[in-house]
Amino acid sequence: MLTYSFSDIGSDSLYHHLYQCIKKDILSGVLPAGTKLPSKRTFAKNLGVSNITVENAYGQLQAEGYIYSIPKKGFYVQEISDLTPSTGTVSKQQTAYASPHRQFAADIVSNQMNPEQFPFSVWSKLSRETLHELHEELMETPPWGGIRELRDAICSQLKEFRNMEVAPEQVIVGAGTEYLYGLLIQLLGRDKIYAVENPGYHKIAKIYESYQVPCRYISMGNDGMDLQKLADSGAHVAHISPSHHFPTGIVMPIGARYELLGWATREKGRYIIEDDYDSEFRLAGKPIPTLQSIDMSERVIYMNTFTKSLSSTIRISYMVLPKHLLEQFAERLSFYSCTVSNFEQYTLARFIEDGYFEKHINRMRTHYRRIRDELLEAIKNSPLASRCEISEEDAGLHFLLRVDTNLSDAALLQKAKQAEIRLSCLSEYYHETTEDIPAHTLVINYSGLTSEEIPRVVALLTECVGE
Image (cartoon, rainbow, N blue to C red):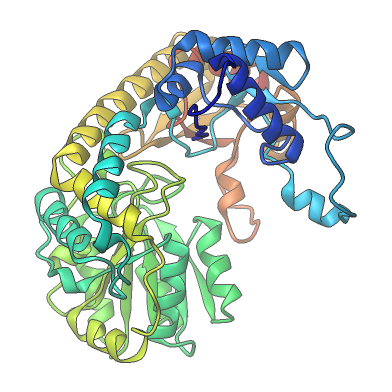
């Protein structure tokens, strides 16, 4: 969230001072072209000014061509490269890396939370309290696993929500799951073979490949990862998301979970990495028990993140190590410093300890259920209804939409691009293209949608499916 100081502005009006601050950041490149500015209401609350102050500042910037608006989407920074001060020659490749994501009229791929749903007022309050009360603690070097207060809070949360009995020492906090994967590879060994789900989240396999460790792609059956193919692969480590597989939405039943644990115990050195990335948002029934909670042989490494429950920009994740692996970690890898700042850790710890996290999850679950129901109802009442089939709508924040069309997935995605809607097909998540891959199946992520956007999303979907 953008933040500007309004102290010592002299006789300048509040809105003109805000206008000058934003204009300066645009011209200097701090706010690159395409950047979405905060909503007027959220921005005003964060800055402690009135809505009219932000509205007037945005109005002046728009009148002068520094920003533009998209109805029902918000305000974005305009491309003004000719006015941007030169800072030297930049190669085309560097420019491409710096380019912002393309803006779409509708986006049902992104997993980013709608900014209106983030608890800014509570987070700001706890941030101020942390800064005011913990001067000494904020300046101390944190333990390699993270500050005790946050690890205690995580253990309490896991006990209450996932029925997991975990000691604070077993929790390792890190800046994102990608970083933690790297630590696990060093802990378990580069000589191990790592198995990932196919289809699956591409980034996981890319991380393993970037560390140059052997990686096997294991196909999915109706109950999750195909255990016979896992056994035949020679893998030592299975990386799975049993409570809500992405992208198929499959929930691994209890019988398959025990079979998987049996696979892990049959040979020394086998482990399961349990990715529990969005378990808080199961919208029907109670959360599925974790593998870790039924593991009696210490073969499960549990991983979770706050990027789904709070925001994708809050890069705080954690893993729970079996006790014997914790001893190895302490001996071999404790020279690594914790990659999350004390300030963020203490703030999040208070957010959990004071009950705000539970309230936030309950509120978000209600919000997501409403958005999902509105989206499903809109599809049901549209021309798309007779040409589609919906599945896996209860397990988390996405569902599958199989459409009846003669268009190939490539043609379907091309039509979506032309219609300014960001879509993804299930076929995109497979490691290799084969004839048995399900076609015409869309992965619908609704976590960033608003009620106002739903009619347009359904209309654009209907338009794309039409031949």
